[in-house]
Image 1 (cartoon, rainbow, N blue to C red):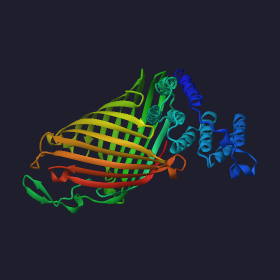
Image 2: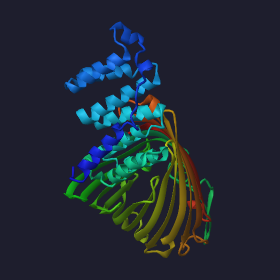
Image 3: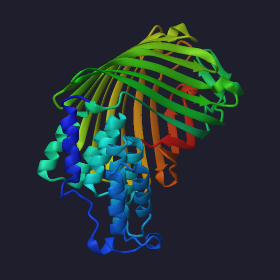
Length: 451
């Protein structure tokens, strides 16, 4: 942890413990005796005192047992205070940041308008290396309202997130029924310059049940007070009983990250490999830059540019260079509700001008927390224009693609840091070339790392 991050961390913790942000238990409620406490003759206030003494003495096992007993109390205020103290003990006394994050998340599931807990959850995400999640919680805390002196310290801490852990990762596993696993047409014939041809059944849309795997791991090395070297390894796979449709992508990226005032700039480069049907499909080398800029207490702008050189193993005429730009704005509207908008454009130049194209699109999302469930709805549209028609087809590709999704993370059924995930997807690509015209509906039922 840098000399900048240490005082920021202490300052933020002090904010969370300040009188204006504490989660006090009223005297009347603290004196209530739940059945569990009555057995040992302790009121909630006495059990809190007992747990605090055990915590201060370093007996974390006894303190945790007492706090968890209080966290089952019928009164929500007592449950909240118990989980808050337990989370602080797990974080500051034992450095169990993931477990502490779970406790703070449970508080917010019942009482989302508690900025002190939002700030603590943001601090846990920062310690775990979940930078974007930490920033999201900072924006949500600001949406709930903070005293001016606290806002100043929060902004200072948000700009000193270089205290992130050096290693981490995430994983998602899901069963995925899909109406069109190969994104193929359902048309019976294909129009060409030499006539119409019947499309083989093997080339048409195929439905299937797959296993979707996604994961990422990273390593961060400190180069200076405001500079890191970050290496990331990402992988995704859609696996089916018929291996001819398996689609696997692996990428490795590395590069420096800089903190410049309130902004952050990251540079990265590395290879991307793709296999389709158990065969090498393409290899690419890419380089990119990302700029992240806060546009207010509740919003953030993110811009990214990427260039890539793609070697298509199936068709040399599709070897290409790709250039893309995107900009996204995220905003917390309330502590439980937020939205985002992204615009992007890509230029791809291939050996065959028929495969060269320009694509531009826009997408938006909304998220909403309802109890212990997080809902995320998104929709997108993009337009693709090819430079020329492919020699086999009478018309040039000029396509409109529509997409939508709805996802729910069900923390009610959470086990450890993993929670069930349900996601529905819809796609429609409208193309004058039959082979590129398709519809797709898919679902995913699985688990994802919650933090």
